Image 1 (cartoon, one colour):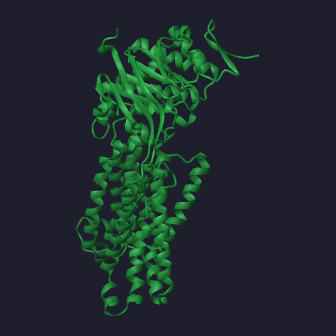
Image 2 (cartoon, rainbow over the protein chains, first blue to last red):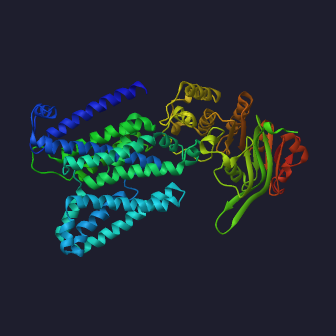
Length: 336
Length: 263
């Protein structure tokens, strides 16, 4: 690896550590860096840090890096710089699951409803929803050879689920709608250590599959026919890449809600800074960028020293969109 | 006449075309040809005659209708993806998906059939890559991105990538399209040089019949009724090129070995 890359990686890691600490320190109650250090090293106990700030910061790292990497996978697989982790219907599937639980409760009513609307049921519904929509996309795509067709099929499934969600919304009470909309804002701060542990396990499986796909991803940069002529088993690699994406983006949506823009924007930032498409370099770069940007977005969303918290989903878009525009105007090209 | 060891690629009663559930569309039938090792072979024929279908079948991008293809005396169907990648490399007409690759990265991807699970390059890989870059005269382009290249430069880089794959056979689908007259000659001349230097077998399809006649060891001529394989001078004396096109506009001139517009 060339030395410029090394320096870039070292400085990015430094920035990540700083953002991580700053994220813990900032919030409705500001905690001095000294206390943050002492608490992290186990010298003093700080209730807020250990039970709120630290799990939230870890969640931000997992969410940012996971979404960035699934975006990278989708952009390479679909040869499309606009692809993100949600093009396969992952987010719409999760929304459908959550909508059925929250909004459907009013329609089905009774004891059923009170049983269902708990935090875990929302998480399970979101996972099941994205899993089902993705399975449908996968089954259909096994009959289709063209990768572009899979992209369109994913979008179509997205439209179908969106339509079901709007029908459900129409029959729901204002209270339920509000609850659904709040889920749609996204949230990093709701996870206990136990939930974070489960999240982390699934995240690791997705990451391992991704790491084993590095070579396949690099061949796919030439297009599918060239990749095949280089000895790649296209169908198998495509399946592994899609499974990795759905594990990463699916669990993230389940635990943190649909978080916009990170998946699309982060891979482009990494490509512009490292000026390469080699996934061996891009993968760690996207990990670092994703984690850093997510930590920054979360710190802003907390509106330091105030009692208000902004929807994280709005912040990621407010920061992500201008960054992409700025990169494009500067380089005049969107490459992948 | 030609012993089996000297044959790189052979077809037996090959029928090519497209099959769907309802019907079979035969593009060309009963193709028998044997292509010799260490030759530069040009495949020519009119538009729509089935050159691309033939190349797609020979490279197992598309399946044949019937008959057999033998690559180095082994049935093409018995090759695994990985074995095929070490025996045959391609230069296709389709654009490469990512133009953000540097020329060096592009050529290095040719080593994929030989690298480990994460694609690390060994010293030997680096040597082969550098040799491929030297052989195609693209040393100065090494660090450029593919989107910065002209069509001719990109074609050279793609040929270097195929060379880096270190296969006995290289197949190119219309490597001279979109190039000016100089670069058409340049690319075909480069292929001829590579055949001589490396003793690889190179098969390419092209519409540059007059250039192919001057440079190829063997030519495969596809017409509506037949597929004929022979040395260019024999093909001229047999009058095969006259049968290539309808006779109302152009005629083949045996002396110059090229087509002339009828006055």
